[in-house]
Image (cartoon, rainbow, N blue to C red; front, top):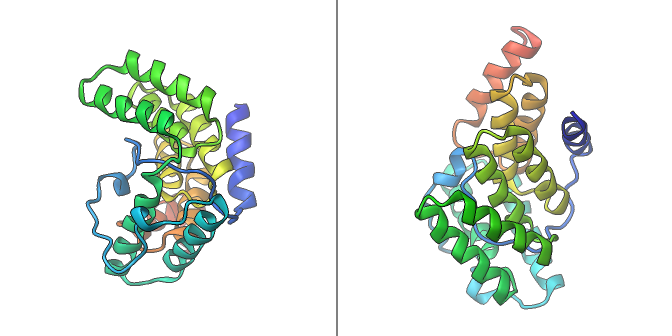
Length: 214
């Protein structure tokens, strides 16, 4: 229950500050996680600045462009560029742990994944993608409250992590918390307005939560 209060506070705050240290995509219950997107014409991770300040500025610019675009193709490209930034943690140790986690996921070894992600979270609790991956693992095991707690950690670090927002909205809807799910989808709309099927999700929840007024 405390986790739900934290999530409600995060959604109400709607913070849009700079992103912190990020790494690769996680298997969370969000349609975006399955997209295969190209990133031509935008900054790529292999060319990104090394300092945290410059990295934050580059991500801030990309997030700003994503929030303003109404073009589906451009949104796809911007999301791909943001994901490329997430692929570089800045720590060889964390990168290795997450690479091993990806291998364990392919090998369907959740016990090993828990060990790897717990170790990574202790070494680098400020790395949002560790919590994002933990959320995906918890979701797959039907531990919805644990998944939401992990997603809350992601959003406390990076309030514009669109995959975490969408995953949170999905879990909230699946667990019957429709008013909070609607807030989460509306938050996603502010961050990532070209997310696939987003307007359909918002319309359906709006009818359910607020009646026929859309």
